Length: 420
Image (cartoon, rainbow, N blue to C red; front, top):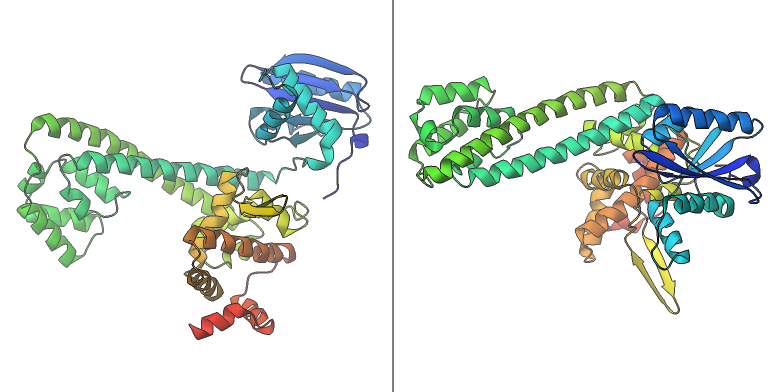
């Protein structure tokens, strides 16, 4: 990626955004002239200001620094070809402010000036925002939305479990998978053990069969357990409030199940029409849920990263080395996009079951006494390097080819796998 220079721009702008207004600092590239102003966050106000920049500075683009990578302000500014956005880490702005305002004073105009300082003094350390294609950005938003929905589903399930333990714990044994339609339908029809006991065996069997749970032995055991179960409590002061709570939560769970199903279908459809999906389908353990996330992590713009180290650092998978005097230590990289890091860490964990060398690496590190999470992070570090090469060369991953390369280098990993 070409390193940006202050001389490439006609104006340096720092924006401290807010819900109702945006504080702006406009500074000339030589730093001699500066203008502070406040505009409304309304679309027409942003449009008027952006168009005024084009009229005042028609020759070169305008550099804008703000503490955002996405959101209404960024979406509004991205449509203007004469504006180049440089996202700044909010933590960096905060630390910079503290360095020169030890009292802890904070003001919106001063934060806008700090971001203009970043552009003037440290532009080479900032990365221009180069958005992916609309299709990739849409897929990315759907994937992040799905992740949040899945977490909401887990939270709702946990609340249902806690409520059922107060009056109907048996249903948790009957249905080990709680994020399912059959679980919701059962609780809607038989919210208490007393009502479940009243049901005929044929009725229960028909219910299980209608939900494609056609396992004779399992269903017989379920029915037997229901008929023989001892109530946890007969106290209506406990049962009735718990039933009401479960009914409310089950209705929410049902909506989340349906929503995730809709998102899964939409993600699958959009992923299949991307031109690079064949690369990410080839990665061990990727599967229908993880492959689209890895694709979005890399994107379509192959000029976005020059080396795999850039992505390793950006994702937070690469550790941080600190030195002081004769001491040095390594620690977890704290500042990074959480969803991006989760994508690579989760994929690395899944790959162990599907990749021979990944399993061998995990066993090798485990034998050395390393912790599970430490090994998974190290494995993710390796996978990014491999995936980066496949992405750059537009080549699907080939496990046999990679194993032959390890054999050619006489890798100790293969020697360990043979010995074990």
